[in-house]
Image (cartoon, rainbow, N blue to C red; front, side):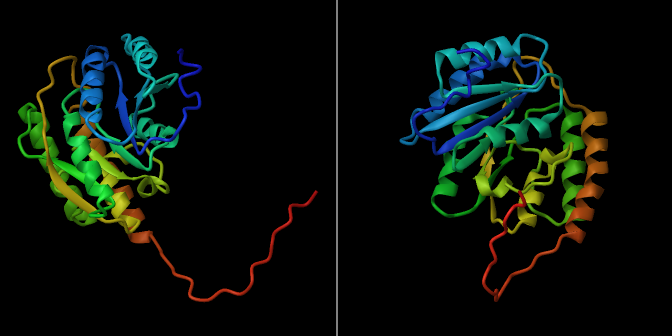
Length: 259
């Protein structure tokens, strides 16, 4: 199955769609794919995994093609050029067929074994979005410090939603992301943006693992400072957001398109 047919019609929509954005992660695709299949095959419901190749140049796409040929539950799409993690997540959400969406990063640091537990929090009605938080982080000190600064400042300015906005291990009803504002950096504010729409958010510990293969794409310059700038845009959205509830309405008139 090649890239032109990887989104062919399947028999029944799965319950869960896992979206994995990745760029230049050829060293992680095979192992992470096996981990996802192993974790999800223990569950009684159907699932799919949508890999979004964000313009990789290292052979990631070829490995995704092979994975999709081996197991049709692993689907992929590939950007012509790098568009960023927010665009990759949005594209994955748009292509997902499941009623529950889950996300993990493609670098292998998020543990797929956490996904079924987060999905169950949604299925049970406990919450609309389940967000993992990293109890023990396996990152270098620069990433740890920058993450703590960003989390603290983000929660102080926008109002606390979750304690670890940088953890990509999440599950949510697909309706939670149906009306997200689209901008580069949106992925850093998913819990805040979902809460702004009135959805319930719960937190649960998530396993965080050291990166064993490949190199990190993020540092202080493209993570901390950019995220803090984006924060003021989200603050503007939060303060300018409006809501209303219709209590009465007269008969609706059918609109006819002019010929």
